[in-house]
Length: 324
Image (cartoon, rainbow, N blue to C red; front, side, top):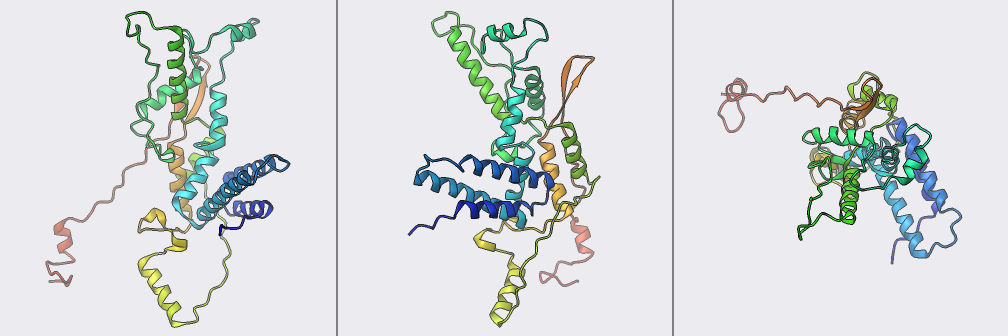
């Protein structure tokens, strides 16, 4: 017997409730608006089949699970929420990329006619200046960017489409093939780019990552008091402290699969990872071109492991760990 369907209204209330506990105010606002938008889209839909409705509710339950685990301190779900909020993945990223991919229009009387007559994806066609600047900048930073949120590295970025001068018969490349190659290059490049965010949002993200402003958005969640009544419960609690938490079946010994206490230091690391994948674009009025800025790479850790001679100061060669 399958799992009973959760009522949409109950699911929406649960999602909005979890939004209030997110440790970032931008995430709380964005996820709240996004959840309402998605549910209102199908509020008056009359052509939904039972299978389609079950599929949508399943996606809603999956999103609720991500929010709950993010609030419990699991690294990957919380990082996914931040990726979505700051436009690294999801709906907002597509909106930011749509603004970048808008065709350029010259400021003159024939701008509209020029835009209509300009053939797209032909030899003389070029993307927007911001798209080209972002593509060139990210190609230089591709060795440093790990692009962790999308599961694939942003490497091997090509600045221009690779179009051969002649085909296999030694003739000039047909215009149709030029158009198809350019269109595929443009779509692949747009799928690999990380769009910039507004200046004020980038600056606040930098301050949060560097600790210049405190992470005051962390809201502790009240939990029900659990009393250990039996000796077996106390033993189980002791095993949990020794072996680590295995809550709800998650966790295979990896640190990322374990819940963490959400502290200011913990959030700074999450912000720092988002900042490294978020560029800042600015227009230079003098040079009439775009400049793209990336956050500096984190400094390598200065921690050094103790040498063998230093270890002998505290521990000898005794295999039992006793001082000799």
